[in-house]
Length: 139
Length: 139
Image (cartoon, rainbow over all chains, first blue to last red; front, top):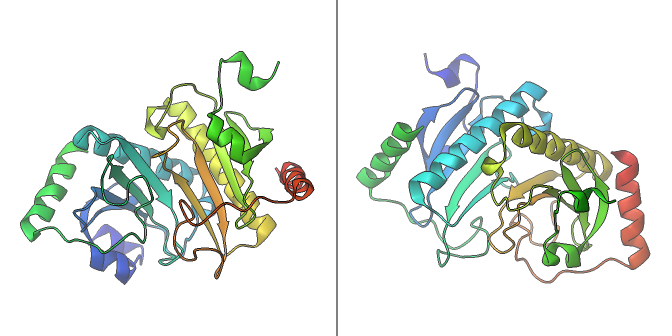
């Protein structure tokens, strides 16, 4: 049985459509957004109905912080990026999810935010799965 | 002696110019951004030279998470906003700072991000200080 199914957890279809599964962390599902403009990971805490980090229990809040920072450190080490951008927004997709994006001077939209910028550029299918595999290996 | 001075901590002049001091939390200075388009708080961990949350010690990471979520909960309760947006970006100002913004359907730029959107609209001076006082009273 998949970790996501035993708790009745369902992934928002918009998150599902634009990212692929990387791995299960302790609390969160880790996914890779299919947009080659920026290395972009998304953590989704497996807590149905939650929209804000502060709605989680104190233990879950600590877990989200720990997992987000671990993923951020790994993404920075892997990419050598200039800056990590992390955010929990949710204005469009309300299911709680945390973005961790590797940014570099001169990348698309730099130094502005990535959300809502231009049009998503999917990877080649094998490049996407290779990147997910690389990230799995580093975590 | 101010908490900020005893550690040799200096606030980035751009953060200083566009926000006012609200209060000292355990680790962070809490500031209110002077932009009446959105209720917008900023936490600045008092750790000189730090640019990323994951560079902090594990204890400081936990403190930043705790203080950010406490501020987010308070801002949501105060404003009754639709969604809290939290982010650590730092593409322009590298000194580590965490944004906590109250968003509402139909506000400026909704549902897009606030960073880089349009032109800052300062409050009337007394309204800004009154809002900072109200926030201090709630925390």
